[in-house]
Length: 295
Image (cartoon, rainbow, N blue to C red; front, side, top):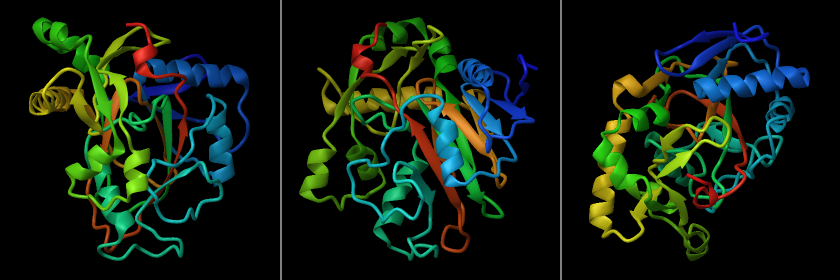
């Protein structure tokens, strides 16, 4: 129990489940404050049993700050959701049917299988992501989360000294190319220009340091690209050891909230040609570039 919240840890170092909430109705300000404090502590919150429509999900997320637009710089399917700022995290087309094999949106979405932080490629990277499950396949399709605070804490001192002041370039183009997707228009390449971000950042509310890793990273300022990517791969391998990872098996109507400043995540495979999977995300916008954050 944390204040008025019924909080149960899900993992030895992070992640918690909150029971007894109904997010379809407006919550008092005090309860919103408690939820944010729980996010600060656990970084990932699972709130089951939430029967929300798009407007209710959006209204709840808006209590935590301005909402980020759904665009990534790459043209995607027409939005079948009720609110254009919501992200369609599904294998479904505008007609509600499973996307055909080889569909551009299907290929593009494979980048979500890589470890990443949402919108790290934007000048002001995301604060919170809130993902709601509407339709879940009978097996597979889990989401894994890795605690970047704990990874930083256990990083060897010599490596901490090496990485603490580094600046990386993040781009959505980079992560999609890593899964072999390279069907970009010139306009998309222009809009997908990299954003610089710190490799180590300090959480503005808790003061904790964490690694800011993502598949969107394509280089480190002042480093040759091969050497930079070798370091990023080494850090990612270290930071995603099983002891730092919570794997969430979805149930319909779960709402999962995570702090992109403290975690990475990735989707896991399922038979996406056979089963529909419909999740919808609202993303709370960050306030500034990490380069402008004090370390």
